[in-house]
Amino acid sequence: MANSFYMQILSVNRLFYSGRCESLIFQEEDGEREIQAYHENMIIAVHEGEIRFRPEDSKEWVYGVVGVGFVQIANNRVTLLVETAESPEEIDIRRAEEAKERALEQLRQKQSIQEYYRSNASLSRAMSRLKVAKRFHS
Image (cartoon, rainbow, N blue to C red; front, side):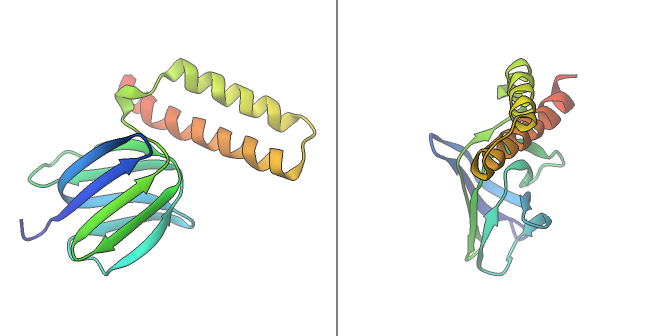
């Protein structure tokens, strides 16, 4: 227990994970960030993409895909609040492939700047979901 912290991962519609962990890795603006026990207190913006964490007393990493949000670290407790959180088993590869194709088609069309950013975000979300799902479904 000395090298762990309490963590909750909450999405808009559910509690994705709650328990003690030794490490959490997530996407931020300029790459990945790892949180370990007794990390400095702070709040960090989380970008959509793959996350992974190692529960206490486990050698195995748990993977997931999250939407945008933020992580709060305070007093050896970590709260990750995100729009969406999915485990690899919950991802429908066919739906993710269709979302990727729709986003690529939208990017090929002439769009306003706002539409471009929305399409680009959709593509990024689909690619993250496919990356994690294909690793576990193969």
